Image 1 (cartoon, one colour):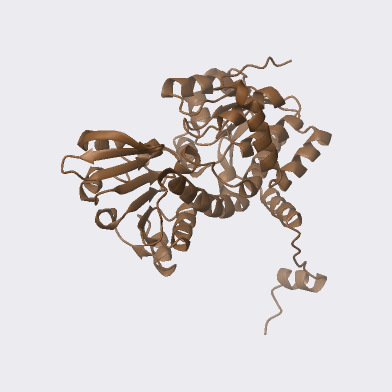
Image 2: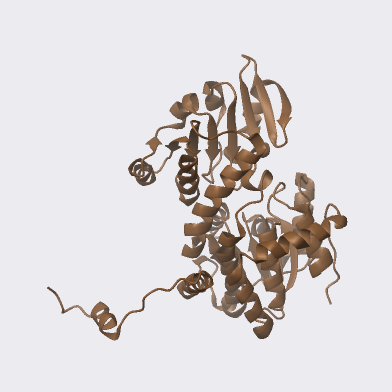
Length: 421
């Protein structure tokens, strides 16, 4: 039997955490249905699952589903500022799930927590950013032989894993949950769109109407943020390196320009690219007084914080989650949430209703790994189409939305080639 170990901020917070977990559950009907199925079928019996995810109310409900499926679980945070401390406490106290996560933990603690969950000797990994898998491949290689495979939640992690696969160093199969249509079409666009602006508003109390908002990157997350910023009255410009995405942004009605030009014009800057150095020294030099800079990509490397530190004559905490850097010429640049995920650093992350689909994909993909992992190659796989479509059907049913079905004649028409005009 697993001995419950943990490292959380304060177990006294568990009561509040439990109430919040139960509140989120009300908006996660698909995951709740999967948990009921898992309780009966026990598809994860005998599996040890190490998870490195944002420790939020929604993640807590995912952990409950995985445990109901028979898995032995350990959880750590995938970002030092994303943990909801009351949720971490409740996971330990109310659900007997070993949890290692403290909001604001330093880098040393962060990796100590990763190694703590890896001490479970997992058969399945569940990542958000690929720090778990990369640690296994670099420092805990003894664990590779016991792994069936893993899942990955976010674009940044998928990029890292595909790079590992190309270089021939990926030693386990991984399901890219991020590529599921019921994940990136909704979580990335509607979840990130709303929660990013929520984090900016909570940390700054700025009125977005009339503000010039610069969105770096027009992937699904960037689309969502640009759409929501415009809806709040912002004057939105997009920066891109991909000509097709840039053209799409233009045709969606946004200004598109290089960051060099946007830096002179913007009031609020939001990075969502999955790359590093998107906002750099030359951009800081061009920014107007009181510019606000934040990141909603997975890692804080999108903003060159070292350059900002070196350029500043002084800095101070202007508000919670707002660091004001005063330049030698008197200009002020405000960095939100230490450059980390602003929607989780200063707010609560995505609404539960959209994470319902993302984490349903995680749970079903874990089941797929448990049953099919031994037959898979050491590659990055998409979520199987049948899982993606089943989750969409379950979500529609929960929303009480009906759709049409094909008639026999229509099915035959779609299979044939000889019926024309």
